[in-house]
Image (cartoon, rainbow, N blue to C red):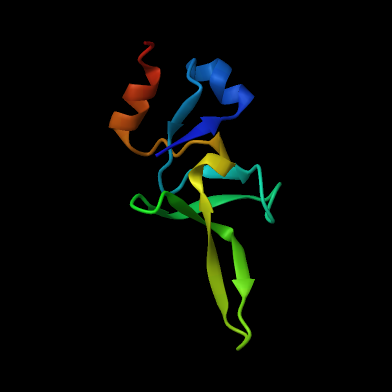
Length: 94
């Protein structure tokens, strides 16, 4: 699952999109939560959905539930580079 990179990351890495992982910071570009920025909590590959820390909804019983967002409605603003393999893969120019 790939999401668009922000203009700064595009120029830095020379790529248009990159895979979304837990820990990345993304910005919602469309929908009810447009403009919200937050860290990725969970990635559901089968449903092509991403769950963010700041995106939740109150249920009628008062409890809070996370709202899934489609990956193509997101833009990566900051990458989690804790993984050495991921960092090396970004540095390689294609």
